Image (cartoon, rainbow, N blue to C red; front, side, top):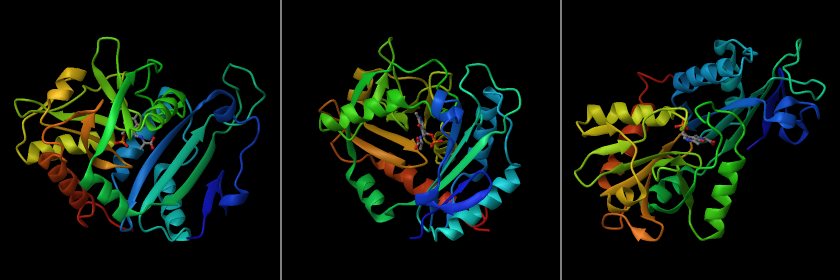
Length: 290
Ligand code: PDD
């Protein structure tokens, strides 16, 4: 696959793509990002991610560098130039380049970066069919993780610690003992009484675009659902556990902290939600390829 990136108005070879040393995203983490999944050429949840991008930019008072319709043209072009069929589109927008000083610089244009990367869809599907094993760790992030900023150090460290200990990922636990979310996904269980549960949207979680779609699908399929946090012991006793994100869609969890969840196999409800989500997103009626 050719690798082409988009930086500040230009398509460039990925290997040549670079940003300025004084970019505020680099110096301060003064930047937001978004991620779109591409599957069979369809851009998943296009509008949901655009809407959240708008909210993240507004929360940091960064002016959108492109009109959203122009951004979609760039994304389409990036998909075409990279011949991307299955993969991910990453977008980062920073406040721009300025001499390193904490206050917002008065006359700086935001910087924009878009990259595309391919993904082995068969492998991702296989992972979902097998399920993953996770651990839990203290949620030591800042108080506004509802804004999709590039400040992901706590997430990176939690993920690496989980991998080093032989797990596939980790769920964050707040100081009340409640699970907030995963390192890059929202957290879900099917509780002991058969109710789907995920943490209520608040500044303590990133309100996933996939999460919101799964809530809609669960209601359409008639699955009881409650937006309510759950503790680690509740998760361990759950019938099913799973996570949702643009990168993993719906991925079943078969063990938490070494305890088997349910019968130790990927949950049926989780897999049915995965199938329903993928087929909804690839239905031509709601998601044009063009
Ligand atoms: N992560 N929670 C966190 C902390 C996340 O980073 C993400 C997404 C989600 C799920 O959001 P969505 O369903 O809109 O993808 C929840 C992206 C995929 C990433 O960082 O790569």
